[in-house]
Image (cartoon, rainbow, N blue to C red; front, top):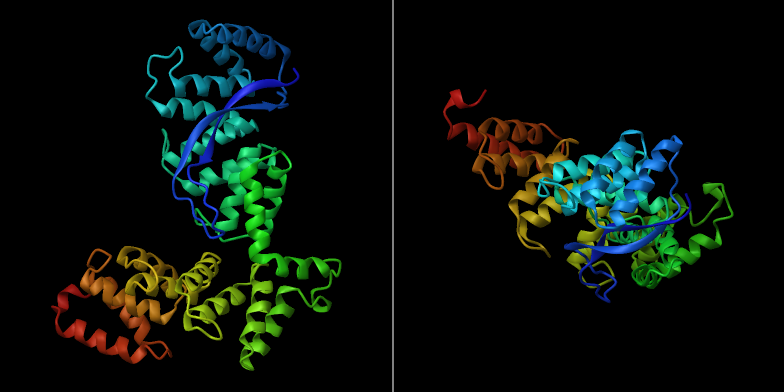
Length: 387
């Protein structure tokens, strides 16, 4: 039926800072005009009903518009499903405007049929817990679906998320570039600023990777993650830290976990550069999100001791648990003590015993400390509390 003018609720960033390391913790939502060529694949009667409903809607006769949108929606007309969701969300012609579970239900039906604007609205619902359990990662996934369909506002935000590594996702510079370019081509100014920050941060590495991108065999490509890591390690062992950082960054920007961890070590300990705990934290957390148990432990340790970040025992315990689940002894030791003392977790002597025993049975240097902590726990606890 050609281009229709719709309204879309999308995330807009409240404060855009010039810093390349900006993080955005608060989002808001506003209405903007958006023109889409989304087409419905359904019977002609649904489209006819939709047209009647839209005529009523444009006259602000919501009482007559809503049942017609519902009727067309029940026939599978995605735009009608979207309009019903929007009317419930804004309380147009409905008696229970505050019940977002209804609007979310209709948005979800439209989103599942591929409607990009409904996907944005469903993303908002998940992000804020509107009538549905709050789930930021699921909200992001729906926003990314809208971005894939060309919604420029969604593309900007998705680019931002991949650039900074938010909502539980690791940084992915190449995805950030992909969505940033798509949004910038549609005139999104924030996307242009993201791209500038990326090239300011990683320009040399990206140029190096691009120069050899035509070589498909990783073994023959000196800028493949594996080869770059080997070069970095060689320079590191020879204490040529500047060169080591250069090649670790080339490997890290392509998602190499070991490179991310080693970069974190360089910044944490100040090998050849001033100590930078925040930079180390960013490297560790991106490796941790990719499942590296050592980095998960170190993130926990930094939260535990407040190294470069504010002390937070609850956050520390979360990362220790992730690491301990992969049998990392140091994380098991710290968790055992935390459960023993009720620090950041609910006190649980059984779990304390479990983790300390696991750590004590390892071949790690921490095993002796864990063994002593375990003996102390047993000596100060009634036997019947340990099962």
